[in-house]
Length: 496
Ligand SMILES: [Zn+2]
Ligand SMILES: [Zn+2]
Image (cartoon, rainbow, N blue to C red; front, side, top):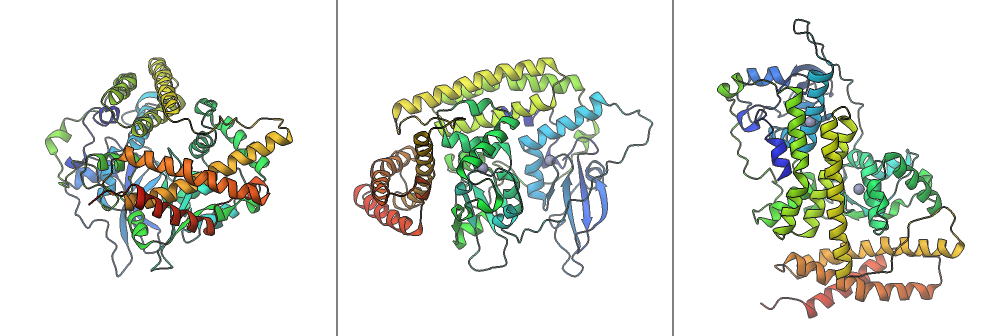
């Protein structure tokens, strides 16, 4: 697949062999005091040459002094507190792109004279972040457009009130966004989340796929003004989904740092025990050997800028073909779409960062066009299979009051339906254990669209309230749970 070819670009970085970086300035080892001050730092490039084997307990905290060693990725600006996440981090697509961009900047555009002493890259220590705050508390101090809080799930540890809250964004395309309150705070502000939110709200408005950061922020701003949620104090924080389940909390709190929806799904598909119940989702096929391969390292030469660009271009050029192959192999739409989104993200990254290399940019544009058209094809096919609701029109500048009401209704209904879907899926996964994913999806869609939504909409209409009051309350949640449980049990439960 596309990602593998990026990873194997030149076979230099190989965590299994103890090679984590191919040059200075990408990553460093930090030795921290008990108060989180940096006592000492060493560039990873030198560190890996000196330490052929990193002891398994290298990052363990010294219980007496509180001192701890950790790895800090300078190009991604993130900490890695143990060797396993470190290994997966350096093989992750995001890191590879950033490390290559850094290499280009250093080797290509601003060559450093060989004999000059190396410039030490200074990194301002990250401001201390208080993760004991909740997402809500973080957001209350932030003015700016925030959309889709109803898609954020908050996990609290019922057995330990002091444990940090964890979060996961449940929007399609965002599910790899998870972490503590700070991670989620940074996620909901960003354009990726905004884009996925509008994709979910207005699935027929394909403009969002090509809108840039500024367009998206403007759109989010207008949307928030319309919905009366522009001010920090006016947002509907109670729409954040709360979860107090010990098992779910443990699952999310112990995920490896590079957990992603995609990897999780692939692990599930292969039946390799990487599913919900297995918190240990280290990359497939990975073995902790941790040895430094001197012979391999000795011959290492950094690739030239041209080689890097050619490699990237070849890789980008092949993405559409890879996707077509996935389709031909009968891979589920959802996974193909995710792969397309991932490729599109990488292409965007190229376009933003590699503007100087016309060949690469050309490949990027061609690949982007192809990917978008494949995506449209899949989405059209899906729509023709299950026409759900009437087409939803995107928000417009001048809405008449009836259009405004319609928009409000559509918005509220979609949000409501999403809650129902999450809830029904939870229940279905327990009752219909063992059913194929496709069948399960069909059943969930049917129960939600044909049974629950019509009856809830009817109930609400009778109340004669404004559509923005159409909320998924605890009472409704109980009703949905009861209905779905009974319905699925009587109608679909597999015979023993
Ligand atoms: Zn990194
Ligand atoms: Zn999101």
